[in-house]
Image (cartoon, rainbow, N blue to C red; front, side):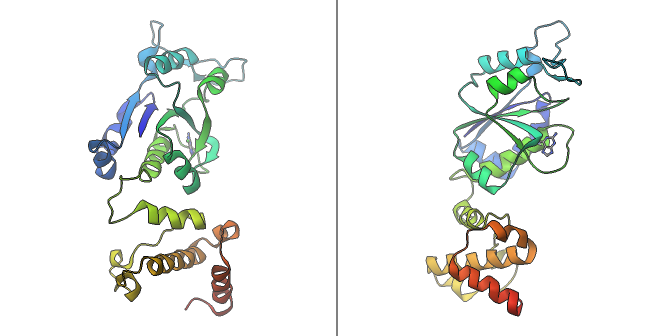
Length: 243
Ligand code: 6GU
């Protein structure tokens, strides 16, 4: 996957991308992240990148011309472009899975009051937020998105902790709590995990995920896609408490 980050602060991305799994993904050729500074494409003598918004409205926005020049020079036109902004669509596991299927992402980090309307219509495919709070800029949000999305790219995680199994459960429950195998928690390993029976292991993990979601985030169960057995299990827990 190729990710081009457009940011006034390219240094922000240096260290995090050189650590751990993202670094390994880059070394093995599964990931390529490059940061680009619109200021390098400013044409006036002050290299200005902010502007009065087209059509008024107060505040300053990212100037369109340097962005258009950057897109052309770095050939970003065909990529799926995400503008990171607090009022965007909320990033969750489902959206992370969807974005992990893209070959080429552009992450435009917002500052000031946003972007010019011409940038919005000509360059941006979707607007994404990482949660209901306000950051000073889109950079931390871009890092979070990169991490959540890249770990879902096949081959990025080792087979010890497979994204397929995590995302299988997360996607079905639409929930962020995936079940850590017991061996990670210092607990004794249940018989079922040693059985080698893949289907039984999956069922066991799914039940653990259901239980954890019920305990910690029952709100997520309202919209979860549960089968009859799982619904029965839930009403049993509701009647009798957790075993
Ligand atoms: Cl993407 N940007 C900013 N500035 N604040 C945020 C955010 C993004 N997501 C949550 N808060």
